[in-house]
Image (cartoon, rainbow, N blue to C red; front, side):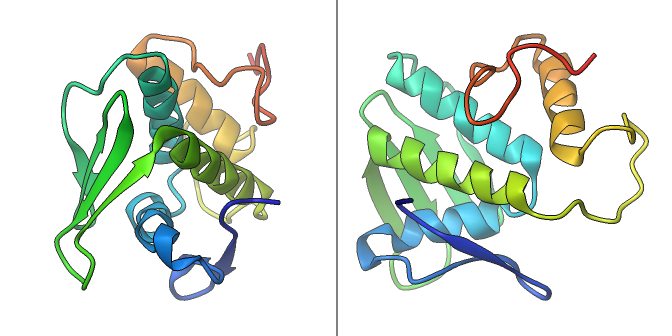
Length: 153
């Protein structure tokens, strides 16, 4: 059973479904801070994987009113708006939630958008290749979560 579940709203985009109160900030960050952005979710997967290996994030990551930091002990979220501006999550919980969100995103129907980079591939696969090209490294989730070990070419 997933830690968090989401649905795709035509107006709002990803929305958490009945998120337990202790995970409300985590669900809100995934839905609004990452949204439909596969590369943003790939970044989050990479950062949580690195943090679990003892490699702390060296710079803040943010956007959409969020400040995000992956420490070697926890994920720290801070939101500029709302009643609960700060939250800290165990890295294992953060990993599980981010992986759930990745599964949600890749399970959505292909969006009807024009893409210049690899329009022959599903959007998430094209974004994976772009992510690897941008960071000049193989994504650490290759071979996991339905991300192929090799390819696409």
